[in-house]
Length: 318
Length: 318
View 1 (cartoon, chains in turn cyan, green):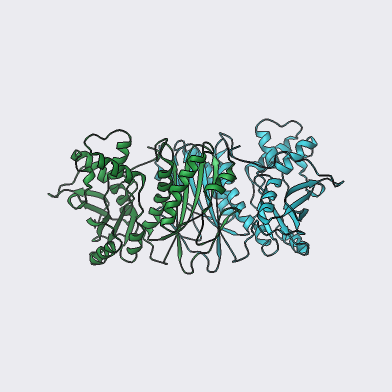
View 2 (spheres, rainbow over the protein chains, first blue to last red):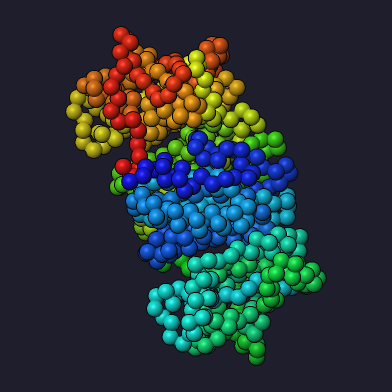
């Protein structure tokens, strides 16, 4: 069985592009770009909590990096460096090789350096800290939404949550192609980094959708001291969910989570610039509602009636 | 039971001093000091692997930060920001309060900002990423040791490993005061940050002793392409270990681990400057051997005989 050091050397020592010293020392050495601020995010994924036991290692490697890059995207930062802590029940070379492939393929796609980390024995746990760079004063915070702002959403929500239900066996009413697409959304989210960059200077607030659309927009509202109304009819609907019973579909779209899309707010004057920006980076973008005085998130149907909202997000200790 | 967000808000939102935006957003925002490089280290500590089940939460909070600050000390960096991932079996407020106290007391002592992190449910796992700043070109790497350099050690080694043996019940031959001191060393290591800073520009290489003195000096030798000889008689001996059987004591001192002292190499011309630096920051410092051509680490007694070395370090998957 390989040692800890052999595992690291074999699978977790990729080429780096903007790191002075990566791995093999007490710390990595980075040279931040002059005049930039750093955006730093940490996400910990635990087997049985964030992913199913026995989940495909390559998909896991992709996802644990993707969720962190999505956080940087929601700040409008350029991802640059990433640090990976892994606890593994045993030194499983096949698992490590696949996990590293998923992780490093995505890192390469975004030119992110795996600059350091730690490997140890323990119940499967993946902890990633990602570092990005952003122009001073421009980072997209949650706290900048103002009454009158539009609310924008990239892509669609609900597919990943349906993908999870499918993994758990609840595929009734869905076409195999739809199931496959939704599992892909669950396992291989693609962070909206390019659009996050484009939204700098246009959006007043942003967040990525991980807990669910209503819950995450609720975080923006709480941080900004405002309320929000989503127009159900404006929400882009995934064709993969079209065959589902309406109540179930509605819950997936509004509260499903794991979407890793961006929700943004911006003044109406930014509409054409945002649509042009989305077009430049091939990102589907829809205006789904508006920021209002008050607090909380409501969803209204085409007749102006408010929809009842059941679950509004995810609490790991609930 | 409190939610994840309540736990974070209650215990893990301390005052920060050099962080633009800490917690409560998709990422933290930091402003690195102009012209500095960043040293970044990640350590993951797992219950039953790095600490005993039921370990005191306050001591754990201290230790998980201390081991990361020790890595920054070994680079000669000033610790600035830290990010904390915690997986907890349940939302235990008492545990969180104590853990946060141990963690934040040490953070305050070193003026380190807890700038972000993640809290989730799962088998107890603590993953810290610490970020420090260092002058360009001066960071202490493992790879700079040259034949003819002296080898230096701060403090003493072996006490923490004996402290662990005591926790496991093997206290035979030890005075209660010694047991208490060694448990303190195990549970409350104090990172040698000040001396690491002083050694910038003097030392040619450095590492912190976590795996064991011989093993960690071995990492320096491997990275530098050199060998090392430690003179047993020059190694400062802890009075707490004085009552132990010599073979046991020798193994603790050479291979015990968890010491979080610094081992450095420096040319003989730096002797008086290093001793003066150690004096300035009240750090015990001893010259314990020399770097040689070749490879590996040997330990010789007063008669020039090489001591047999049994264990040489720690592999988490062994």
